[in-house]
Image 1 (cartoon, helix red, strand yellow):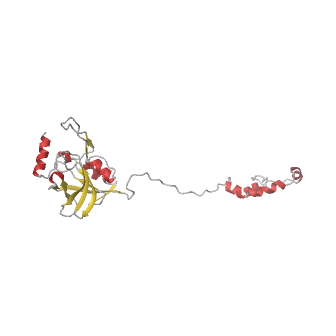
Image 2 (cartoon, one colour):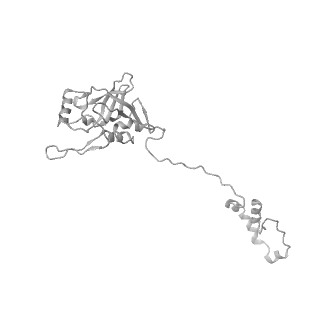
Image 3 (tube, one colour):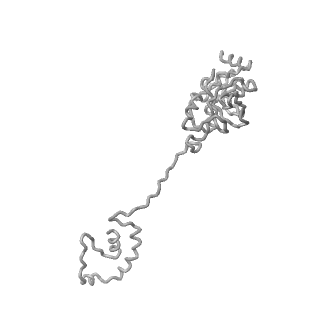
Length: 251
C-alpha cells in the first residue's frame, strides 16, 4: 500500500523519479498480476528486457543493467542513435536494475523516438508498452550520456536526466550478420595425386580401347610355340597391351 501511495504522489506532483514499476528485470519477464477487486485477475505486465529483445533482435538476456557489458565483443556499441539500436540505461536512483529501450526513429541529433515497456504506468498499471515516445539528449557534449524520456502520467518529458551507457547495435562486433546463424566452411578441393604402384581409374579407362585387338589375337596354342620372352628382373610380365602400358606408367 505504501508503494502505491508513493507512486501516486510522484505522478501527482510531476516528480522526475519513476515509480518502482520502472525497474527492469529479466528474472521475471511477466508479473502474474493481482486481484482487481472485482474477483478477476489483472493481465500480466511486460518487462522492458523481452520487449527490447523482440524489437531489436539483439539476443542478450539478463537484467537490463547487464546488457551493456554483455554486448562487449558480441555486438557493436556506440554513442549515436540508430533505428533498431537499443538504448541502455544505467541504474539510477530507484531504477536499480536499469532499463533498455529500442530506438524506433531518429528525429535529429538530440531527439529520438523510443519503443519500450514498463516505463510509464498506464491506467494505473505498470508493465505497459509505449511505442514511439520522445527521448531527448540533454548531455552537455551531445553524446547521449543523459536523456529525458516521455513520462505518461505527466504527458510530457520527465524532468530527470537519466544516465545512459550508450547504444547497442544489432550488427555483430565481428562484422557478421545480425542474427546468430551457423557458419559453414567448405573445404578446398584437393587434386588427386597418383601414387607409385597404383593406377587411377581414369588412366585405365584411357587405355581400355587397346584391349579390342585381343579378340583377334592368335590362339593360345600358337602363342606357346613362340619362344617365351625373358622377364625383366624385378618387373612383372605384361600379358596384354593394357598391362604393358600400365607397367610402363607405374615403372
